[in-house]
Image 1 (tube, rainbow, N blue to C red):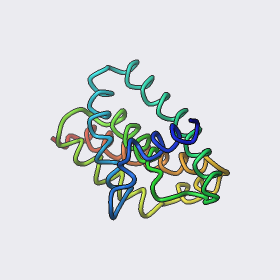
Image 2 (image 1 turned 180 degrees about the vertical axis):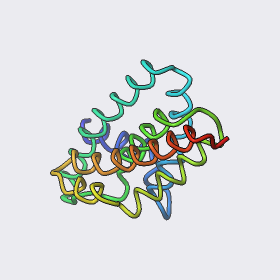
Image 3 (image 1 turned 90 degrees about the vertical axis):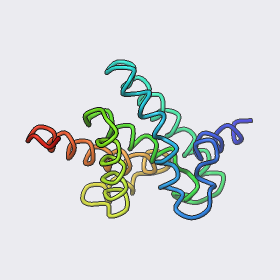
Length: 151
């Protein structure tokens, strides 16, 4: 039961098992959750993000230990958490959502410092931490763009 639940959560209900680019699929699957987080207001959104993070660390840890792999590509709950973080920091709106998607994927793929260092943490923490850092970079980038007046 624990493994089945961990697989369901870590693959974000199967999004991570879609062919080619599972991280991108995981981010796409997170869009409705990001919309819900933004519509829930700051308290609801941060509570949702916290829940995803806790479940993500646990489920990634279980799956990594079971499969004996450091960061299996089908585990995409880290992308969900990272994108949620980006969109909690970014302004609301479809344009910002698209920008957040693109910037998050960019930072997640290229892993600028310290994103690359954080993925070396052990187990579920390492799986989650690098994507949260990428989400922080993306969200702060959008926040700064909004502050300088980008429409």
